[in-house]
Image 1: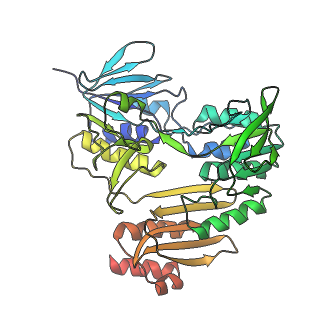
Image 2: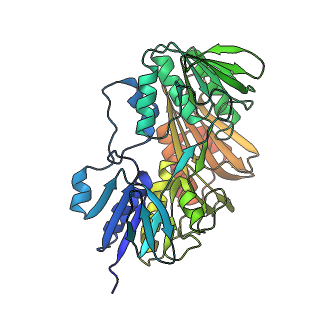
Image 3: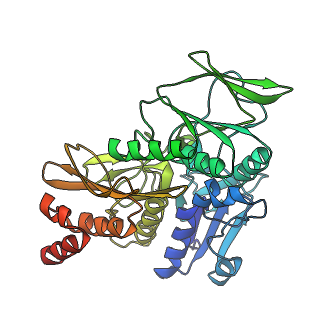
Length: 409
């Protein structure tokens, strides 16, 4: 009889949570967690913020080695899975050798989208996805005076704020007409733009980059399509991410903007599941197939996949939520803003503490908050319950919303 063996490829938030959840759900078979990263699995969000502030900062580990040892999880660090054979149920590893599995979970994450312009390979051009990237960025910006960030999304703005608060001269270049254009409402985008400008950051929207120019093999300036030359001792590229589907595609698993999975995180290959930034999944609340990049999505899908891998009923239907800490602004989002036709604002925008309720018709579909964590948590509860407040209830404030939600439930 073949020994029961579950292999997880990828030890980010999703992979580690899946391993923990499998044990919590009673799985007692062999369990291997493969990580190409040589570091003990760590939290990714601090890499663009706290980790960059101090040369002595170390990654914040998800779980101590004692956890993996105590739970009988074979954690293989610095090991790359190079191929999957769904028929033979094996995983090939770099350096030779392979492992057999009875069930396989892909948690391969996403890779930074690369900038394809002259000068993109110069020293001093950085991306940020893992701890090695963050260390390189921290070292490369230690003595830099001028920093250019290409991309006005979450990663770019988090780094921009961190660098500006450290006294650097920072320019952010964004191709779209506003910052965070694909992620938040115009109301929040406008507020965050004003906040970053208050930090002394120069923001260029509707602007694209022609080239990165160098001196002695190192980045020295960024040239826009309009012909402006902007000094740059260091350049961070943050123009989005692409799902890492290489293993899945080579194995013949269905992929389209990610590894295609069903509501239980099953792929098109028998016995193979997938979670996190690398997957495209059916999102019940919106009726769309989506790919989401967030810690919450990865960990909630991990819990779902663990149950499904053990034969339990499990459909992923968690409310999506995200956050981004940019300097003194904590931006939190719950739900997904599709088909928005109405926005209701509460709080004090001038003081930097407010919420934006996003509606499709009379139905609340998302909530964005700036420095209002309590309201964010309340919004998650409302969305999970299917409760849509009235404008009057929003105007009365959080206490009235809590009471209305309690009465609804």
